[in-house]
Image (tube, rainbow, N blue to C red; front, side, top):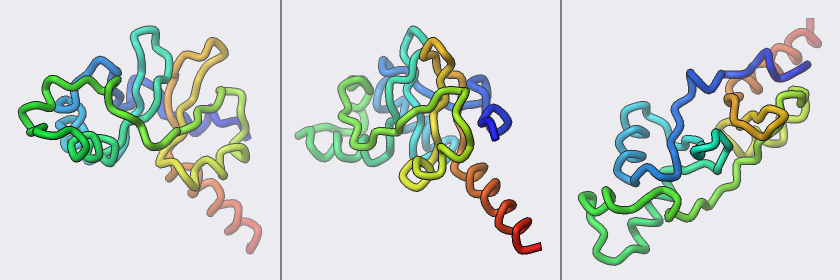
Length: 137
């Protein structure tokens, strides 16, 4: 089954630019209660995923960094520990299962490499749960 059916479009996705500050990321993640958000660059391309852990490790490894100081650190300067691999829109849902084991969401790109949305782990699990239930019946 094509993944377009499961796509949460970019307009409905909370994302940040690599030019945003750590503080902006912390506040947006807290507000939405997310542990990870995609980074989309100025050209609309997927630039990685920033996680709470990335922000925490940056604070820990930056001597003297206070919460107020997070206003001066850009996300492009925060090392990303995880590499959420994106897929192209023509991928099949079966291609996403192995990614969903490690990632909260799978970024989706169009044919030009432009970020167009995500597929959440929840939708992938629900799809496979329905398949299992249908096989039992």
